[in-house]
Length: 376
View: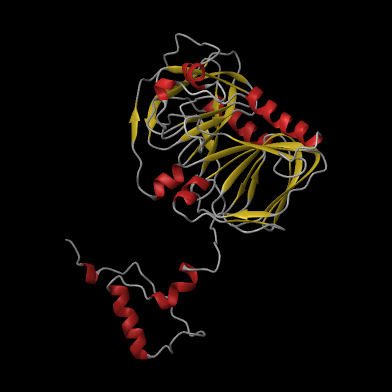
């Protein structure tokens, strides 16, 4: 028997309170509210404070995950959990404590540690979510994207736009772990996800030092004439650590020579970009790498949208909103929307970070504010 909507218990419960600006709770008003609940209607006058706060209020909380603890659990999973169809990936997703147990680092960003034992294949599939891999330590795994084998090594950033076939293969004699970043929560919220299975094993008959994408696109300032049209996301599948490291070092050397090229004194930074457009490497994700000299402190900065940071090398003290941690190599932490971030170094620190800024910029909703600077 199917009950009518009117006879079912309403999923709506209108907040009823007498506060400044609210009408008296008369019997007549209660009857109005009862009818609105049955009719699946909500009065704006009781909800406007939650729906339109004076500044962003994120459900996500600042949080830090220890790399040492993450790796211990990843190794345990490597002994207990096979890789194959059904689970697809041996990945431990960061679950923000403010997001109700969902495997989401922030409301829009996914972060996970993926672990692959020696000789294992992570089967081929594709999905509409944008993704990347960032390697904190180790080498020996190849990610194969649309048949193009790409080596993964420490410090490498490997973007991969949505709906491209990809699988991973560990050709070394030791396990390897890396960070997976995706826009899974954003895609989930806007109900845009598609997923498709490919082969169970990864075909990597050749494992060249440079992938086809690097041979074509990995030449700074040079674009193939046959590929002059802008791409939706970066066609370059690997941004190598030696290039990133050199770029950061050169910024600091130029600063020492009196040239104001750094983001702030003692603070070098680079952004990974699409070589066909100069824009963000993925349409929904901005990725950057920051290097802070010893005894450097960043001014407090907050921005609309969320970000995830990983310590690549060094140590620092980090403050996010009201939270404060000491972080070291491999640790990950989350900065929710409109929460102020400061980083203070002792010996110096290298930080990889990614955010959802491209989404908000395209929507015309991005705003940032730096202490002592202008808001934009």
